[in-house]
Amino acid sequence: MEPVGTRWLVLHVTGELDMVTAPAVAAEVARQFGPEGSVDDRTLVFDLTGTSFLASSGLAVLADAAKEAARRSLPKVRVVAANRPVLRPIQVTGLDTVLEVYADLTAALQQPAGD
Image 1 (cartoon, rainbow, N blue to C red):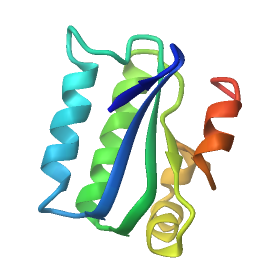
Image 2 (image 1 turned 180 degrees about the vertical axis):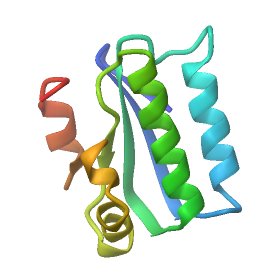
Image 3 (image 1 turned 90 degrees about the vertical axis):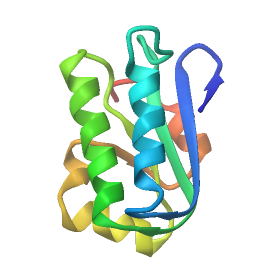
Image 4 (image 1 turned 90 degrees about the horizontal axis):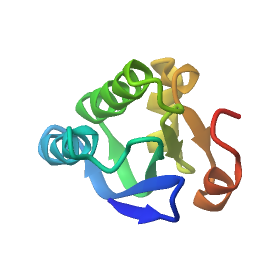
């Protein structure tokens, strides 16, 4: 994760987000949400533009992050997903109703939190 200004915390995920890679992504998200985490009042943004495949285990990571943000009364988690293999599973599962989905990172970082 890399802080982008003071409002955003961006996680760039490349390759496949599946049962092999999801645990590492989940661990990083948990670390950021932890007691000494960096999320605080920032908006967590998953940049999946470099992701080629999104499995159910990857969807679970996104869903868990959304739940944790809601539990902490933080802004909705944002996802940047432009390609069909990533965007379609988000839509089919209805995660697009609990995540804010954007076609590119610039758009995701330009919208005020909560919009």
